[in-house]
Length: 47
Image (tube, rainbow, N blue to C red; front, side):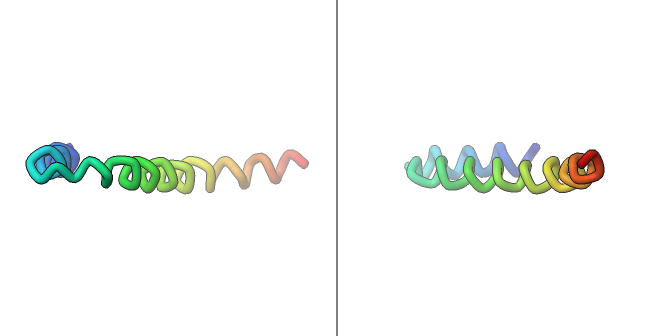
C-alpha cells in the first residue's frame, strides 16, 4: 500500500497525470492475469 501512496505523491508533485491511465491499464492487465489464469483452467475442465 505504501508504494501506491508514493506513486500518487509523485504523480501529484510532478504533474505527470498522463501516466495515470497507463498505470491503471497495467494494473488491470496484471489483475486479469492473476485472476484469469487459474479460472481459465477450471472453465477448460468444464468443456
